[in-house]
Amino acid sequence: MKIPIITTAVAAILVIAAAWAVSEHRRTHHDGRSGIPAAEADAPPEFALTASDGRSVTAASLRGTVCLIYFGFTTCPDVCPTELGWMMRTLRQLGPIADAVQPIFISVDPERDTPAKLSAYAAAFHPRMLALTGTPDQVKAAADAFGVVYRKQTPVSQQPGFYLIDHTMTTFVLDREGRIVHRLASADTTPEQAAAMLRALAGGAP
Amino acid sequence: MPRPAIIAIVLLSLVGGAVGAWLSLPPSAANAGSAPFAGSWDPADPRLGEKAYVMCQGCHGADGRGVPGYAPALAASRWLTGPPEAAALIVLHGFDSTSEPGSAYVSSRMLGHGRQLTDAEIAALLTHARASWGNQAPAIAAGAVSAMRSRFSSRSAPWSPAELRAITR
Image: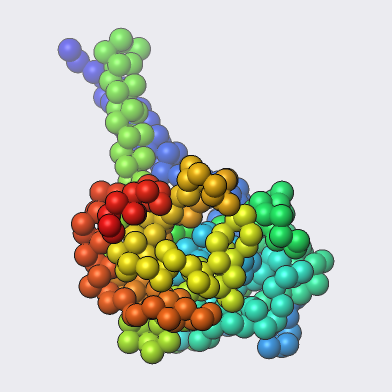
């Protein structure tokens, strides 16, 4: 059988197009939680929050530093410690370059996560981890800026004031311009892979 | 267009799609299994146990008092302060007392943390908890946790109290 050259060419183009389409879809949609393809999120997310030591921290005050940002709450049973542990393993992979990366935990539970609780929680994970909170409105605005969603669950205990919170479990990587350049999760990315991404961003002179 | 050409295009597109999918597969397989990895904390940190307990405090509380009906208190906990094998297995694979007669935990079970914590971290946090909130049980060595991890390497489901009693009898 003889296949005309034009047909072969068309077939080759289709092969490449299909491979690209699938890979592109995976790249931009692997994080079903955020739904925003990384390439489209060029505008840096803006926020104004308060660190557990009382300092005011805004997106602008973090410009010039590569940041790892994770939203959660200190009484989270499994997801937060898992993802923050993954963040710490990533930083340990980086060696001395880790000093150029700012780990940040933003509480989605301003009602219960007092500055004292946040300080102790952050210190248990990393001596330089910044724990941020704010008024419920400030926290909501920050979460919206990142496309993070959170919602109180129905109570799982009779104990007053006890509740869990469903929340986005993405770790955001911000470059020195404050743009979101990666959306990561421990289930998809190894600490080694995440460290390679951070090395590319933070490895050079600031 | 001749039929063989169409077949060729369809086949090649399928191959291309498969290659594309393979190229961008998430590396979750690399995380599978229970093999220990480089830990989240410096293993030489003198406060390792206290720090690694951050993994537990969400449910069991920074004060070890737990949450009624949801997570048991660790202060005066017989499972925590009893045989080191049981304590290690509970952290490695979890604990499920929902079918235990008279259990206060009818809908709440603990998931294992063997994939998030190294043996040294588990030993340190158990040692910390076994000596906190009035508990006075002896330290647990990392080797004791490693022994349990390798002895039950194919285990993933949380342990029932009856299973743990059989293992530690």
